[in-house]
Length: 158
Image (tube, rainbow, N blue to C red):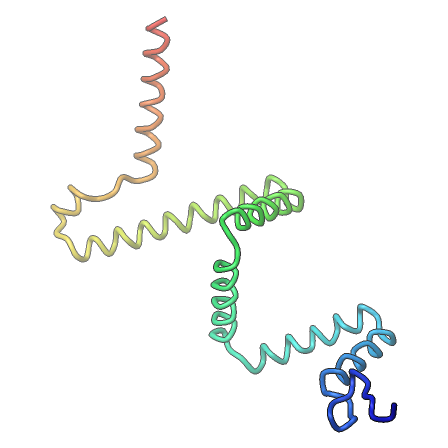
């Protein structure tokens, strides 16, 4: 029986590195609470941030996203999007959505203005006047007029 080895021992009768790590982790978890692990996680995150730049996080995010996309289907992304939308809705009021809508509109307008400025630099003024995009105000006015005409013609048809 002396030759019979414990499954945790390697060929030399010593504990493996994996087994030592597992036993150490179990002992630590018995002696420390959740706050301990949160604190060492925070410190580790701060140290990682100090040692790595933005590119590091972009790269691991890209790799993680690619792996997730390879291993999950369309339904997974629909489900997490739905859950995220519900959680956001529960945590934020109407003012939040008004603010992000305003910011999104401003960003879109700034982007359109930048594109329009770039177009002005590459086209002649005549071509630009003939080919420029309709402004938001113009589109809104025309859409309102079309809606009014549509409602008016429906009333006349009755």
